[in-house]
Amino acid sequence: MASENLEEKARRLHAEYPAIDLHADSLLWSRWVGYDLNKRHRPPLPWSFGGGHVDVPRLIEGGLGSQFFGLVALPALDDNPEEICHAHIDRLEQAVQQSQGLLRRVQTVEDILSLRRGEIGALVGIEGAHCLRGRIEALERFAARGVRYLGLCHLTRNACGAPAIGLGMDPGQGLTNFGRKVLECCQDHGVLVDLAHLNKRGFLDACGMARAPVIVSHTGVSGVHALRRNIDDEQLRAVAKAGGVVGVIFCPAYLGNDGVEAVVDHLFHIIKIAGEDTPALGSDWDGFIRPTRGLEDASKLPDLTQALVRRGLGETSVAKILRKNVLRVLTDVPPR
Image (cartoon, rainbow, N blue to C red; front, side):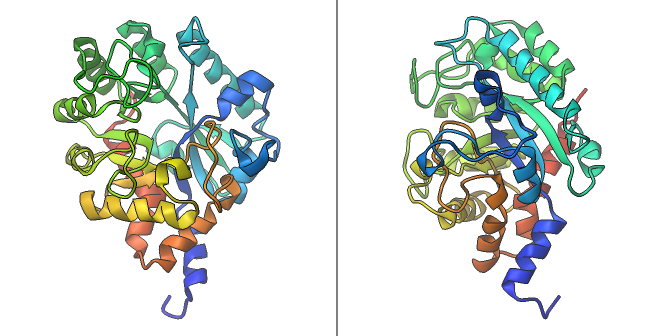
């Protein structure tokens, strides 16, 4: 491949390593406005704000191999978050049935590796342990339905701990006893623990007691842009020590700058602090964000690979960011 120019190399790598994105909130829009994942959409609002970023045609066009869809219920609005999350799974399964084979539910690495070019693997993760309603058996039920990660916190305090930002913030609050039980149950049932949104003390508690890799599904890093919701270098090292991964969000409010290069800056900082086995992609598409310029929707993801190659990142590291780091974590925490 010595004769390849940078653009050709980036295209080859993007095709060879179909990307895995750790977080998109598209199922919220399916619930609220009947958003059809199988139809091509355009973001309805200026600057692509809010949603309309992900659908099967644009996932295929963007060269993604698999997409994690967040199961989201908002405590201030939803009386029964557990059942709402199950309804999200039902909607995804309906979309899979209507996709003519282009969208497939996957859980294991073997499932992902079996996908043919042009097929999209769909995985699910819960955004916030408030959806358990304080019941371990709810987690067991979610695990049985193929949920692959559980976020210990979202925008409000819950029985597991307190958010980095949101209702019930408390920097002194660590992981609760129930939170520790949930973490243990996740590991027993092959569910990854997601530390996005959790405050620092709870975050470090979870990393310290983890006996399996943890993830941060979507975040920025404070070493590039100081923000309460972003994670700092101590947290990066803790995730790396636990064997986990950190998905970089595609939102300029978290990145501190606008454009694809801002995402690259955060990925490079993670490599610098925590090593090349730690960075991953966590777009937060459809999550009430304004995506950064150049990554306004899933079809634009090849531009990120181009930027990584232009910045001089080697093939091994590009492959890990796009795909291999998440595959490793899924291998280490198989469903049970």
